[in-house]
Image 1 (cartoon, rainbow, N blue to C red):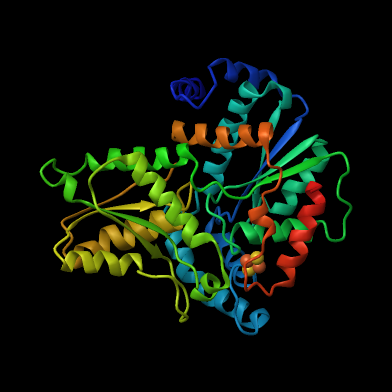
Image 2 (tube, rainbow, N blue to C red; image 1 turned 30 degrees about the vertical axis):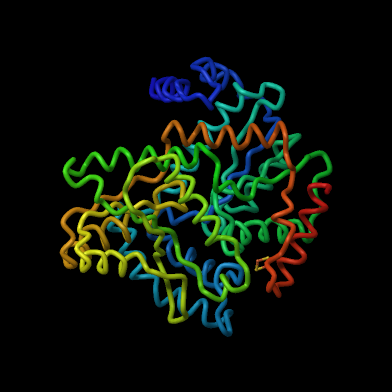
Amino acid sequence: MKMISILARMNSCKFAHVSIAAYSIQSKTLAKPKTAIVMLNMGGPQTTDQVGEYLLRIMTDRDMIQLPVQSKLGPWIATRRTEEVKKKYSEIGGGSPILKWTNTQGRMLTEALDQMLPETAPHKHYVAFRYVPPFTEDAFQEIERDGVERAVIFSQYPQYSCATTGSSLNAIADFYRNREVPSGIKFSMIERWPTHPLLAKVFAERIKEKLQAFDSTIRNDVVILFTAHSLPLKAVSRGDTYPHEVAATVAATMSSLQVPNSYRLVWQSKVGPLPWLQPYTDEAIKAYAKQGRKHLILVPIAFVNEHIETLHELDIEYCDELAKEAGVQQIERVATPNDHPVFIAALADVVANHLKNGPRLSNQFLTRCPHCVSQRCLSSKSFFKKLIGI
Ligand code: FES
């Protein structure tokens, strides 16, 4: 019943050409999948027992973070941070909801695609996480076992960064380094989609709902603070496209939202002593309170489902603790897209357009950052060119 009502809600959206019939089609099609949709993301620990391994994988991934003597310093930092991070996961219910949301999004997306594109159906989603199971390698093994005809590698980070999507793609290239690429599968890739109109619309809808929580007399004075994970300035100077792709999502959202409120883009979750992209979210909250702007909305703009940085950093550390200390009168946090029907329609529209019209690989991906010196990036780009047959 729940699935039927979700699909019925999606059906009212003009971009989602799905109907309740999709549910019955999906329930009938336990047949061999024809098209794989591989959903790339970083993942998060399901239980606190996975925290140590998760941190170790992040801290030793040179695409994600570059440390001196990384093979020694990385494990040392991971071990040192494990207890503190475990405590944070305990405070949000004992684990990350990323797997739950990705599976929900994947199921709803493939049901919509089965209805929209019968010629490439049945579609099946595969979760490919970088730092926790199900790992990227597991997803590709499963795709090969299932014997699909087509596989769409679909980044769940709408804005591309060499540290996130780039790292997942390098992991795919690593997987096939000493293994034969299956000749029967036609691969293609969606590595960025920061300005899709339905992505902007879902953020706008979420903000509109939250603005209602403010008294109508001050609603137009609420400052909208878009917040995204920060990036080391070294990566920005190298030419990573992430900051301007995040800014593009912000601009598209504001143009869809059509409200008079002022807004800013700020950056959260910096780690370590080196300089990162600023202004930092926590410092911006304090500074606005000092300026007398004491009504704020936080909008996580670069992640499509709830995770530790929204549930703990934004909700507990900033909205509950820091905002009170800073004298903020009211602060609200907008939910991430999760299973919002407009978001499922966005996913379906991005993939359906890709399957119908391509491109199978974008030129933007093939061009390296101007100051990239990574051999991994170099070899991974030529791997994908071959894999996708460009
Ligand atoms: Fe961006 Fe290598 S760091 S392509």
